[in-house]
Amino acid sequence: MNTKKTRIMTAMAVGLFVLLAAGPAAAHFGTLIPSDAIVTREDQTTVTLDIKFLHPLERHFMEMVKPEQFGVMHKGKKTDLLESLQARQGKSPDQAESFTYWQAEYPIRRPGDHTFYLEPKPYWEPAEDLFIVHYTKVCVNAFGLEKGWDEPLGLETEIVPLTRPYGLWTNNLFTGQVLYKGKPVPYAEVEIEYFNDSPGNINLIQAPEAPFVTQVVKADVNGIFSYAMPKAGWWGFSALSEAEWTLKHKGQDKGVEIGAVYWVHTRDMQ
Amino acid sequence: MRNHSFKRSVLIRGLFIFSLGCLMSLLLMASTQAHKVNLFAYAEGGTVFTESYFPDGKAVKGGKVLVYDSRDALLLEGVTDQDGLFHFEIPKMDDLTIVIDAGMGHRNSFTLKKADLEAGQ
Image (cartoon, rainbow over all chains, first blue to last red; front, side):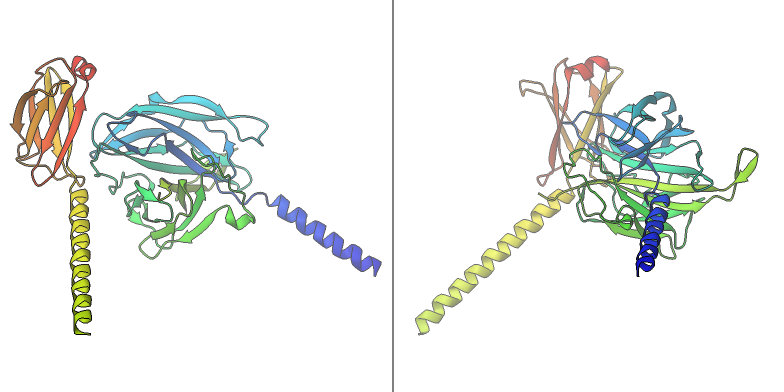
């Protein structure tokens, strides 16, 4: 009887250990968040963009070196903004050390949709034995002209919105298409996380179980996916593919996870 | 009995007309919203450039543009071209209110600050 009890206890302890060792189920997200998603004449017309590599729900930072590419597309024209990036330090309340992230200011001068895009340098993730590159986008609308948001940028992989990506209420459905080299990705897996540090979020979300941290939906045969966002704030959508190319780590070829990330903002209907 | 049902039918008809009115005004409001006109202006090289457009990017063609100073005095007026554009020389170093009037209640305004004009001389 006693040994049986001990055995059960041991099994439970082992189980717990395995769970802990597996670590948080949080997904990595390239994060590109503007201070405002809809700029009007009455607003501050200079937007501040925060560029981070995060576990958005758990608020954990990861070190980020200066990105490979950062710019904005407006009326079909791309402008390189790499030189406007400033290094900043940040950490979540439960992280001991702080990590580098990036910030840029951009004065919006013309009407229309401004799609900001980011290509980070490959991030080596020892836990997954691969590199991670998240091509990240966000759209800022300016001065009442709602044009440009549905145009692809021609990134290696990207999400192209089928839902206008601003002016969304909480619970609205966001639909997008996952492209890889400009072609739809059938049955792409899309990870979704809420950005817990969204401005105005007074009610931090604690995931009751690991699967709640990252929501997962799969795209259809045309690479089209949808998700209804149940809370006000910023939502990250990340469609992951494996690159056809590899990168060297300590002389060995390693796989590269490429993510197409898109951020959208919702507001409560009131 | 007859009188009673007559009253009821009047009431029902009244309600019907009232709700039809509500529905129509809702529809009208919705269409105004969906066709909200916008005007955007900036100053460059001594000229004020304006562009007038609907949210989907369609140009406001032949819209009336009215330019007022900070005391609401009309300085000049003009008409947008095929691309919704209209430009004019900076008329006065002052906060300018530029109004686009596309008719049928399609009207909006844009304030170009004195500082913006000075920067765009």
